Length: 62
Image (tube, rainbow, N blue to C red; front, side, top):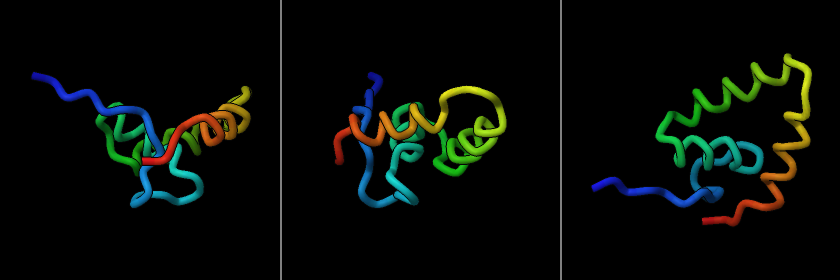
């Protein structure tokens, strides 16, 4: 049986808003890896920062 975690921002593993930590928990990866992926994606063109702020506003707290 697989337990699916709800996408939410945790209270215990936050740096800025908890978005990367929440995504990491949802997809089963380390929060450090998810933060590294996010920082690396900042170097690419695209709306990464805008998506981060939207997720910050939309994701509920745990």
